[in-house]
Image (cartoon, rainbow over all chains, first blue to last red; front, side, top):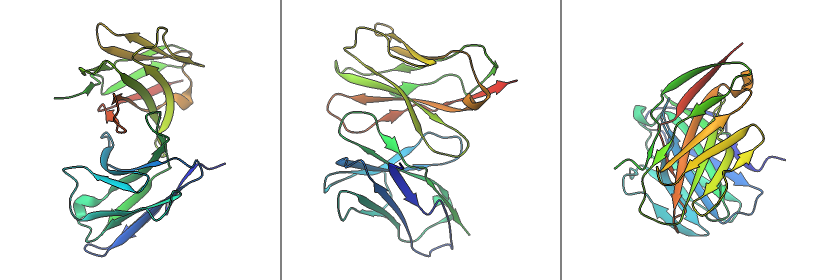
Length: 111
Length: 114
């Protein structure tokens, strides 16, 4: 019955080595979001898609990219991870202006 | 300017007692939505309750109720009969008008004591 699935749950990468996090959904929602959340802080929106329309937050570093090949899948690419990119990455979906449904998150460690 | 303010970084509550988590918001839009999410230590954000700006009655979902005071711009979450499993971080969030994005508060950590 999983609705928003994130893989992997834990990801370890090396400084500067590209990494891709994935998110899939079974809700057929047209909006998908990626958040970065550091310890004991609120989630910070990186970008969101409305269908294929990509919306980047102004303060999202260029190091972060995203792809949404179809309705169900969305990927977060970190091109050159730095130590400061270690965080929980949360994917969420919504059908519009209603509540957002979150996945379990991917905890990224950068060595 | 901060759109959502949660002034309580952490709270302790005795099992079976009620607890109120404060949330104030700032918007000039007449149409907005207010949300509460729970985030246990596992990390997943769990939707709890929603209040629309035009809703006449306070929202309730099981043990969760939202004390919506529009004139004061507050949307406090009340958890009744606290359980050990309620120990988590709680976030208040707001969606304004036609936006698809949420603004989150800083969160409140609740610890339920046996």
